[in-house]
Amino acid sequence: MHVVDSNYWDYEPLKNPVAITKQKWPEGTKPLVSVCCVTYNHVNFISDMINGILNQETIFPVEIIVYDDASDDGNRQIIEKYAEQNKDLIIPILQSQNQYSLGEKVLKTPLSLSKGRFIALCDGDDYWIDEKKLLKQVSFMESYDVDLCGHPAIIKSTSNDQIKGYTGYRPTQVTKFQALDLINNNGNMLPISSIVMSNRAKISIINNMPPVEFHTGIQLLCAAFSGLIILPDPMMIYRIDVPGSTTELLLGSLNKKANTAARRIESFKALLSLYGKCEKKSLKKLILKQANIVEYQGNIVAMLPIFRAIFNGEYILTSIYIIIKILSINIILITRKIINKKN
View (cartoon, rainbow, N blue to C red):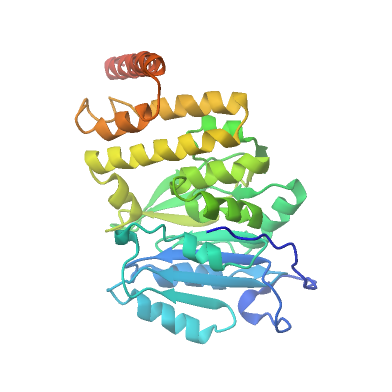
């Protein structure tokens, strides 16, 4: 599905930030920011997510698109209640059949429906804790003229409600990075629910998903245009130990982890055409790093999907070179592990 870009967002900014629930805009005003949320069976978390968005204070119009993938735990009913109370803000998309299980890329639907010049993401089990989050990110994106912005997150365990540290890259100040920096950080510097992207980047995601997917693919696609900026403050909570979470579905066992890595490799390969020589070289290294024997506890059988993805479409001589590179990478990794154990 290809989406046509629109460069028309006509509104008069407010003089001071106002809670989005109290804003009044003329009929037909396009939102400057669309918040796209994907949720499934998050009945214990969805209120925190929606409240974190509704608490945002901005000088621009916002829309909230909440996509529920056929939850059966009461999640849908909570979304319907919030949508009824905030008809001018919340657009619910309520599936009757689980689309993820049918192989659909569920994020594409809310992205395709979004109208904003900027698109923010938030998963149903995460939530925002800074009411100026959107205002800050949009302001810096306009100042730096980039297509991707994010920030670190506070990790919180659902099992005991304790803070477990931070996730995401943490600069000491607002910093612009190039796509190469992102690739050298394994294609992952931003928690998914911290991301704000441009409409241009959104269109690229829709048109390239699949094979490009996962939060790594999203970041690498968005950063290909003009790099990214990262704010230092953690403005969201990232929950762990969530039953049935995407992390559990994709990484819950060695086999799941290997299949996810194989799809990630396909994603990285598809991205190669977007980058220059230097970025391509680093991205190829990142592809080979997916074949980490130590990470898979030496289980070569479990890693077969990874090897198939790496060698798919390669010539014999290239494959021999790849084998040598994989072996050298793993010798280094194993040596480091042995040294660390001794220390």
